[in-house]
Length: 358
Image (cartoon, rainbow, N blue to C red; front, top):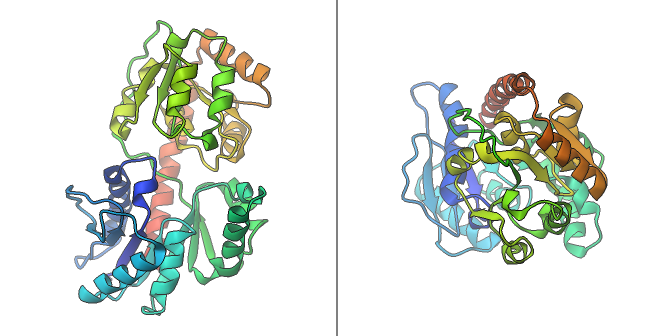
């Protein structure tokens, strides 16, 4: 059984990760499609805009429509022309986000009526309940059109349950498939002297940067490590002079930094999954996090490895405890075992859905 899959990524340039890392993730997903296919496996076509790549991928074909960003309508029209020129008849249109790429998929389906739309919701939809016209329009769009998709992918059970309270999902197939961990897993030997308190992610308001700065003020800035870049990087450097700013690193480069980290401090008010938190636990680094959906789900299952704070004093107390009393490695081994078993199950499920087998 062959299957024609088209993956739409109109805003690839806006992601915190590099273009090649994002495409490598799609290639990883497609490798599970290949496992389920016969000898006639058709590589999924990934259509992007706003960037290009010269990298070769084993399981996907990549076409860039423009080096510059395109609005949704122009991206859709160019995608339609490309699909037509390649004589593709998509069985699946995969929209990585429930907004721009999902809207593009809805329009493309008018020309490919047999295609089924598969979209994904990575974020915490409760954030859309905050006041503001943009949030209102996004939530309205989901409520009006989400049931036009064949499937909706979530990154955690709790996130899916909360989304179900905001938008009707009775007419679509829902499933859980978190963002996968793809880097070769090697557990390095920990650096024992002055382990760092780390920030890992895009340095922007949504990550609670100002709160992070306030919490770590009592600590020597030499014990602080900030991995990432973003619009608030300058103000963060000014406030934390002497801290180690590693900048935006590739996934592989980040793996080498975990051995220097004693605890990950996450201050994002909204977090549906928390990939950085899970990477930290994989590498034997405990987590102190603001209460949110992703952290809460982790804490329920692994209460010794992650602590949730409600105020600054509580956050500082948990940081001190983790730094002064390192945890037994066996506690992390339990998390690692569960993580990789569940990841394999979710990736196989994703392949089944994208191939319209369920």
